[in-house]
Image (cartoon, rainbow, N blue to C red; front, side, top):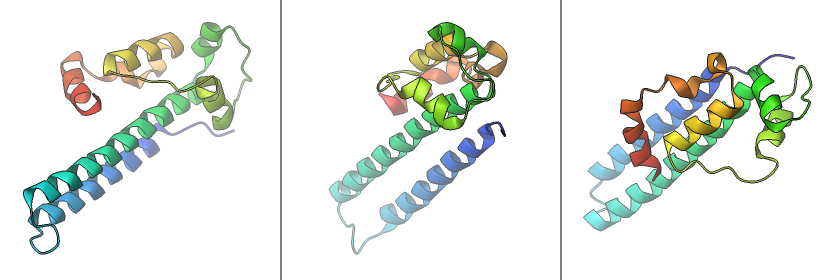
Length: 140
């Protein structure tokens, strides 16, 4: 079975950000349909919610794909046997089948990823701690 490609998730998130950025640039400069500052703020809030949903989907996909690439530590953490080449669906079920996982901050995500992913297979550790407040600002 072919292993997950983490770059695909990045391309999808980058495309969504670009799409919404372009949309908001048009909306801000619009004078006929979206006239008032309040209308533009309302629209910006709805776009921000959509971006946050894309971010959440990105994080979920990254976690699933990382587990798909190397599930050795997750197997130990949960105390379960995972097939040698689990499908992405199995990885997703193992991670999220027991309920919704909430990461209220990047630190919470990083802490969880340390428990389930080997250091060499954990891209969440590559984010420098000085960048975490910037990420948290968008997620809280």
